[in-house]
Amino acid sequence: MAKLVAVQRHPSFSLLPPSSLSDFNGTRLLHSQIQYKRRVSQPKGALQVSASSSKKILIMGGTRFIGIFLSRLLVKEGHQVTLFTRGKAPITQQLPGESDSDYTDFASKKGLDFVKSSLSAEGFDVVYDINGREAEEIVPILDGLPKLEQYIYCSSAGVYLKSDQLPHFEIDAVDPKSRHKGKLETESLLESRGVNWTSIRPVYIYGPLNYNPVEEWFFHRLKAGRPIPVPNSGIQITQLGHVKDLATAFIKVLGNEKASKEVFNISGEKYVTFDGLAKACAKAAGFPEPEIVHYNPKEFDFGKKKAFPFRDQHFFASIDKAKSVLGWKPEYDLVEGLADSYNLDFGRGTFRKEADFSTDDIILGKSLVLQS
Image (cartoon, rainbow, N blue to C red; front, side):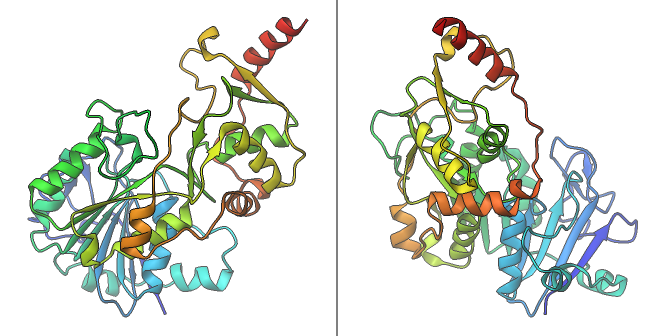
């Protein structure tokens, strides 16, 4: 049975020895000499889960979305898992649809004696870095863990250079000026340090507890019975992958020699158009097929607001490498996965962001004028 210990800040506790992560530069993690450079507020602490484990695993960004699902799988596999929280999310939360007994097994057993004894041990075998954005952030981790067996990094398919030839493959050219350039630089740094690393490049991720307004953006409009504004023709092709399938892929690369110093695209099996996605969200949530209004984004000034949650271009990647090398394949098709997200999250009245239809009103207002 898994055992979890929530560790809050305490002057006598340290997650790692003081010499391990001595250059975290600003954000204190349990010990005044252990600092971590994230441009965020002071963390609340860390969470320790132990089972009859084979690996000691540290998950950076383990307390929301991807990290929550990944940590459950790792504990079930018998690993000892430490979650690092930056202080924005609760240390633990019950998964949508998770039984009370399962959550209790995961999260309710706490003991200071266990904290003092287990957290005093040096080092981790594996690091999962789910939320790293800049290369400089991983330097103190690598310096503090010289015997690290594997560094598994969550990158992004957004690093690829825009191309007329799709889907993107792992060997395709990358864009050093993309907004995800920090992730690209992190991959390069891992390679230059001689670390045994693996990089996962998701496309768009969806599923319960998603903090990005992907499917939620559509669900808000469907629930309100509003038309769905879609830029340009609506036949732009994109790709979504379910968070549970992504978590499974992260498990597949753990300790896998075939994954050493390799990059893998991870997403859903099929691609979908913007219009098709709007219709799939409606079908998954049990709403009537929506009215879709197309507009030219160049005719509008939305200021800093984002009128649509996807990049206005074709954007999708091949997952063939992960399927052939790792033996992984996505469990969820798109409608089934959207239904899972809706039923376990939005359909229960929970969501991350309140509905904001201000840009919709601008678009629809002009559309009505043109029609009249």
